[in-house]
Image (tube, rainbow, N blue to C red; front, side, top):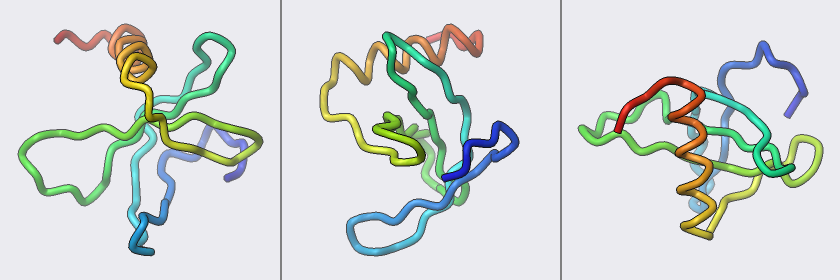
Length: 85
């Protein structure tokens, strides 16, 4: 992925090789790591499910398995974007 703050969406491939477009809701550094908070563009479910990824190296995004890390990153996202709840 290009390092360009103007990019507002990305396409990722899931485990079944399906391409899914995500809006980049936020990108920030926390505790020395870069994180992306994503939201599927065409998700028709009633409940919103964010995807949080960590940038491993230039342009390579990886999932996060640790619940405590996910909670910290999502709390920072909500704080940065003035979201209650």
